[in-house]
Length: 227
Ligand code: UDP
Image 1 (cartoon, rainbow, N blue to C red):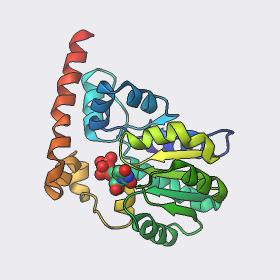
Image 2: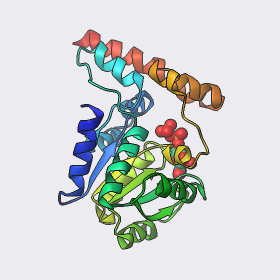
Image 3: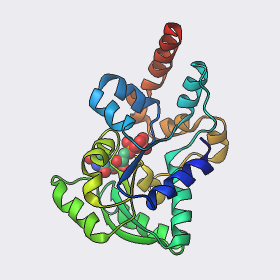
């Protein structure tokens, strides 16, 4: 789908009964899903699965099933907040280190005038019940669940319905970006499919994780041969 279609679908969830969740897999998450059937189930169980990252686009094209658009989770989140603000909808921010969700809340409230922040909580908690209860009591329409993969997908799958929210979105490190703690790659890098390389330069400790990228392409190649 295109970003406009994804956002339309996301907003439609807010008016449909029940709880829905969005997953935004990149090649690293796909690799994880190959090895971990529970993670695979949690990602495939999402009501909307967005192709986050140029690797997924390349992989889909290699398999002869091209995708129309790259849909980074963070851009989906921004579009969703802009639409939510117009309708006065409320958002709960869950995840990242202590203080980050609060900082993001302040910035987002100013950036998206009309958006209600129903509450925040950091992502380093032991007991799930009080968090679920806090979200339920807040009456949030949407929850951004930023716990990293696959923790966030498991969390949305298991606890989503109990929160009473209409939509949960698994968004990795997005709260760090919204809070200004981590910068996204400049537009040139993003437009040229090099966001992953920018992140690697900024955070060399991600090298181990990024080695999943070539592995992903090898696995796509193997899939292609099977076809
Ligand atoms: N995180 C969390 N709780 C945890 C583990 C991670 O809240 O138990 C947060 C972490 O602080 C970071 C995010 O989850 O804000 C994961 O970021 P990462 O860069 O790994 O995600 P990506 O954007 O690459 O999917």
